[in-house]
Amino acid sequence: MGSRDIILKSYLADNDRFADLVNASVFQGRQVILPAQLEVQDSVRTANVKSHRGKREIQRTSDVIKRVTLGTQFIVVSLENQNDIHYAMPLRNFVSEAADYQKQYDNIRKQHEQKRDLLGKEYLSGFSKKDRIIPVITIVLYFGEEKWSGATDLYELMDMQSYPPEIQKQLGKFINNYHINLIDVRHMENPDVFRTDLKQVFNFIKRDTNKKELQEYLANHRAEYESLTSETFDVIEKLSNFDFGGFRKESVETGGSYSMCRAMEEMLEDAREETRQEMCKAMEEMLEDAREETRQEMCRAMEEMLEDAREEVRQEVRQESYRTMEEILEYARTNDIKEILDLIEEKMKVFQTAKA
Image (cartoon, rainbow, N blue to C red; front, side, top):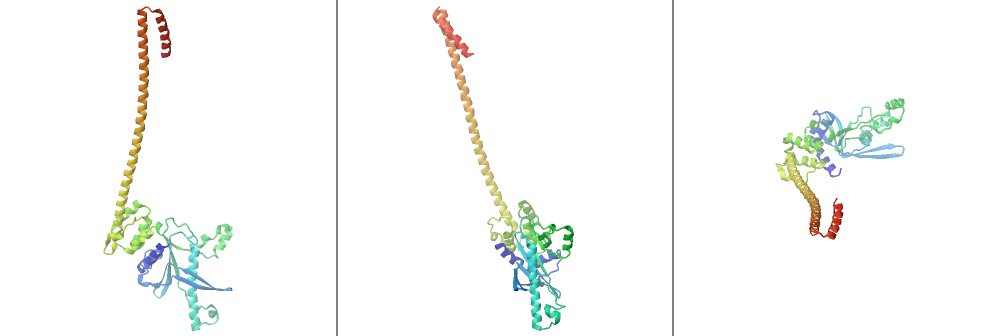
């Protein structure tokens, strides 16, 4: 995730937000975990696994990991941020949690070795009957646009369907499954279950691909987005697909808070101006097309008029010639010039035949 991952790790490491995330995802919004109950844990989880080949180190790194105090007991909560679907996520989380449990076991065994307080079977185990390990919970926070299509448990990574039904049933009794705790941010049903500014972040991101829906949501929740902290503004800007177009949050700073609504209004006005310019450009192109079409139509009309004129001239010439021939013929008849008369009559017959 690059720079996104860096800013998100810092943002979620805040105890208020981390407690809110655990309460919303694990306890359905009930305020079970308080920020004061959280203690930072090393994000690098390392464990040594012994085998007949010797020791082998397993190391996994979590984005954020904290220990939670619940009365006299503890749990460990690990957070994994995902921008892309990880198709082996159940296996990845399974190994990470196994490494954490192994590390707890190693620490317990070392304490017993130092105290030398174990005998017999407990000594061989390095673990007494009364020893207990701390539960580990991993939450996967997925921000991708595509709905999560990867496996959500270990069974989905196994090709169980290839076995005959009776064998599948029997194997299912002995193969332990493992489920992931997934929050698909863009497709979650109710981001309002969160109590901190995670609610504003998740509600914005959930709608950021639909500008109309986002605009309507901000208009209906304007008060919530009028005074965002700089951290929250930065997280939305980094994680969201919404193009802020170089918007400078300094221009809307009000007492250390930032107005997302005002930013949206400025961007909306920029969008309107851009739309107006595009419309003007489109109208100019349409007008030029119309001019060109008009010029072509005018040319065609002039050509037709010219051809009509030529045809009229040809008809007038023929008519004038005919009148001239008739005048000559009449003159010949009047003056009894037989030879001329015969010649003209012959020519008139030819002309009349051609005219017909």
